[in-house]
Length: 166
Image (tube, rainbow, N blue to C red; front, side, top):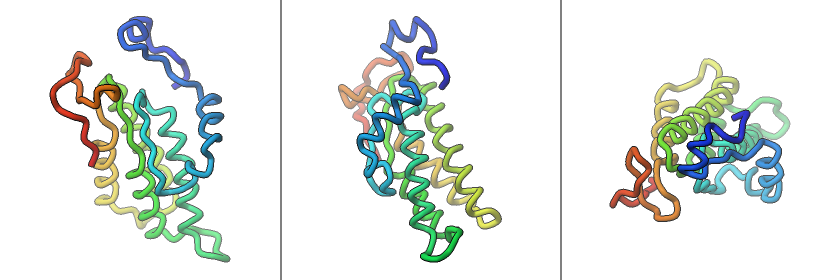
């Protein structure tokens, strides 16, 4: 996201303002050790299109690459990177009021993961793994109100259904 505001109406209706890359990195550096643990869990209660969770995933994928690389070897083992990278994706959760943000965030995270997965696994990529990551993202990045912990309807109003993560 290059701008901090999509529209004045969205700021007025939902208080939607995006965090810049510089601020995201500065804040994540405060918990640097956690962002570099493949299995540490993160919940972004107002994820927007994913500025925080995208950077968290990038850092986790670097850690996954290191964990999948045997001592004295230069390249990660594809099967181990696949496993570690799925753990990384599965440990990230996000909530947003607006469905277009949720969809954009899911796609952004998938593209970040898939670029790394394809680069490391090459011909050993597995379509079932790709489908699994898409499913995980569909369950972990959800449309809802993090304050009430309720799902929201297409107008952003709370429903009776609670937010549930897999």
